[in-house]
Length: 280
Ligand code: CNA
Image (cartoon, rainbow, N blue to C red):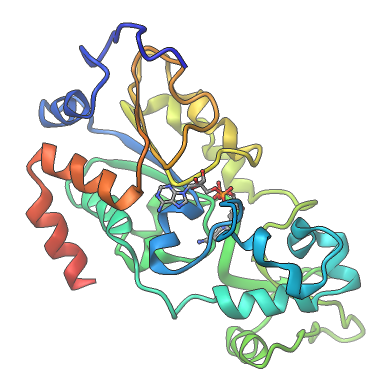
């Protein structure tokens, strides 16, 4: 990471410069890219943080390797570990964080072009971001279907199955395939809309990446789809991917919630943000 490369678009590579760029009306089309790190303060563990991450805490499920819990061929053999985890992750039990409210605030101000999220917790939606501005690249708990015949499965029966930690079977005549929420597992392809919309970052005039290790392809390639001159801001506990390598990359290596508060403050939006969040 060469933070000394002089900025082309922002003037200088700082949070204040990003805020000024927004206040000057130069960021009317913002793309936001997020991952599990924006939901950890809501109480949902991420995958990869050492000690606190899900993968570090899966020993009790007796998996051959941690990622197996989201592996489609493992699921076929043993779906129970996934259903154990699903009970913990199922939407409804968690409150959106101030970072989720910040994304909603961008929308309220008419600045949000698209939110690309890897999260399956639906907290962006709960914070008020409209459905059509969210691309859930790894699916979500919003729908469920049979892994064999693909027939959809009733939501109320799914809720019951998750509550009772029972693996539901397809209701289609003669099928009896396993049913799972439409979360994208390793070995499954991403939703078609991802492949259509993955070019949208090219049209952005600001990119904000938050709470992701950028280690899962093809999502990890999204920030690279922004034009070279487009400023990219990373708010994350650690440097990830190629963030920092471009002339207008700004790195804010800290907690997402404190990072968005700083950005909101520099934009003059902090009070509005806090009250939006308080109402959520
Ligand atoms: P990850 O690989 O676990 O990375 C999380 C990143 O966020 C890491 O770089 C952490 O350092 C960072 N981080 C964690 N907490 C904070 C914080 N409070 N402030 C700032 N940075 C923080 O997660 P990714 O999303 O990158 O990985 C992709 C997987 C994780 C996707 O397939 C998701 O479906 C999946 N996942 C989603 C959820 C959820 O929906 N909330 C939870 C766990 C995993």
